[in-house]
Length: 307
Image (cartoon, rainbow, N blue to C red; front, side, top):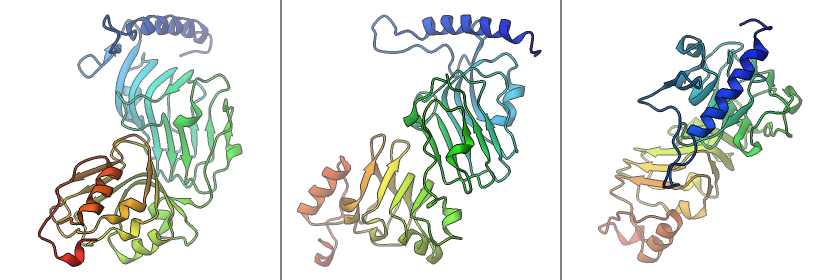
């Protein structure tokens, strides 16, 4: 696309956006939004809108004339990802744990908005765990919400390396880490990512230093009888089912959840197939009130477990 043709193209794209707005208006019963694209109809040639869920590198081959994107785009390990002629993006863009990534150029975007219909995360932009990241380029007039931007745990990255942002961008603390970083360092106090319950001694030692998690925690088929390592932990969840407890046949004591602070999209907790958990009636009621669901309890455990 030539520079001379860009204004004309942009004008046409804006006209298409107006058409798209009409298509996205509520239906007659005013209870459901109709989007211009979906899984069955991924390309709207009239409005130049497309549904795309995949890796950034493949987007250029997906459709040359897609200016308005709905979906979920994940970064791959290139120094500079290409966003081509994207003007509006609805859903999420995820650039996570990419060792080669240096620059994220988003200055062509007129808007970037989160939407649970197209992406499971509450953020529109997620950037974490990129040790060589040097720059994120936005634009002053971009429509983007501060609370939908997540940038943390990018070693050596500073706030001033986010250019032309329409607001002050929070890039986190030097003590925010991915689990990979936390296994190498002793100063990590927060973990970032979709995390698994610590399964070996090195991970346990790293978790003992952690007071906060950004992301999710999955506790699946663990050998522990309790969850005490999670006691007093704050979890800022970025998608529903923030803490997932499933398939744990040895787990008996889950009282630690009472001392956890969990926030984010609900439900905060999700339980499945934990046949051995047991507590006294009063503690059961406390736990069920905290997790906002009824649980299956084992009534055959010893009295020493009923606490």
